[in-house]
Amino acid sequence: MLTSKEAMKALAREAAMLPQEEMLEVSRKKSSLYIGIPRETTFQEHRVALVPEAVGLLVSNGCRVVVETNAGRASRFEDRDYSEAGAEIAHDRAEVFKADIILKVAPPTDEEIGMMQHRQTLFSALQLSVQPQDTLKKLMSKRVSAIAWDFIKDETGIYPIVRAMGEIAGTTSMLIAAEYLSNINDGTGTMLGGISGVAPSEVVILGAGTAGEFAARAALGLGASVKVFDPAIFRLRRLQNDLGTRLFTSVLQPRELEKAIIQADVVIGALRGRDGRTPCVVTEDMVRKMKNGSVIIDISIDQGGCFETSSVTTHTNPVFKTHGVVHYCVPNIASRVSRTASKALSNIFAPLLLTIAEEGGVANLIKQEEGFRHGVYIYNGTLTNEILGQAFNLPYKDIDLLFAAM
Image 1 (cartoon, rainbow, N blue to C red):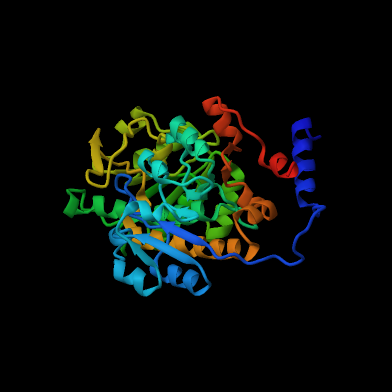
Image 2: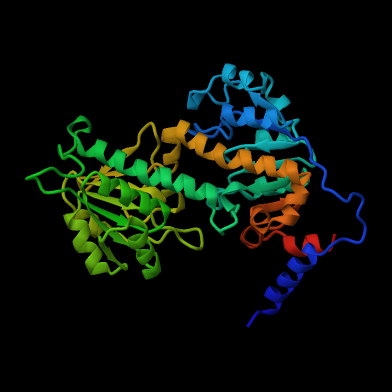
């Protein structure tokens, strides 16, 4: 049985899809996009939103792309690579922010918002847990349309960019664990995996989502013994089916979890909380009982972490030891392999931008595609995200109702 609010939203979606009374054109007019890619200035953010190959594709389809000088250098893409692909290189940062569409990886800084024009479209991460209220108010005052790439859904209901970054974080976490088990990093001298006659290393993974799945794939590929814990049995079943192999899985039973962690060489934290805060499922007492020199990789640290002993670290100083256990708690693991991550972002952004051009602009795609509309949190200065509205006590409007009224 639908609530009155859900019924209103359903009616609004239907109304938004109905033909409008006044139609100026029979066919949809393709638009030429003007895209700006600024250099990321957020601490240790090395990714870039579009790689040169993606820029070349957009330019060949009639788009104008302006890239700030050195925007891709941290991912080993030079200005020459972008200019040869057809981009304009801007040495004045303010020039990039004159574009109609600003494409970023990290949320905008106050300085960047100050350079933005009225009625622009911004693509960037939202990062609910660190989103300041002032940022939202400043974006709203500029009357921009802001779209969170971490909230955009595809045709199957999946968050494609979140999944791509999860795949990278999960796989990379096992490579990091291998480094800190080795002698090079003053580890125990253990090879992650196993060989004939030597028992395999024990890996415990908390979370059976995308990051957990790809951590398990990497660990199994190296020959490790893997145990996966998750609160939901359906995710564990899905993991078993996707991996095509039988492995130890369990719901989060504290005693079973403690027993597994005590024996583990590596523990990966890849849980996600529905309310934006990761549940803390590993107590300090459990960590104290772990083997000396074992490794914790807390992928969930950007949402608070799932280990009581976790504390945010950086790529410059990535680890610390507590009770003899190595803790790696860098929030942005994908930035460690920024070239791969940037290509993954481009694989999603470039086709999306081409679709926007085909549909005649951002507003048309917002109206036509529910999954894309799901990523919009500010539309022409109006806050449309209920979670942000309630969190910061700001007025907001349901975007389906907003479009139905147009």
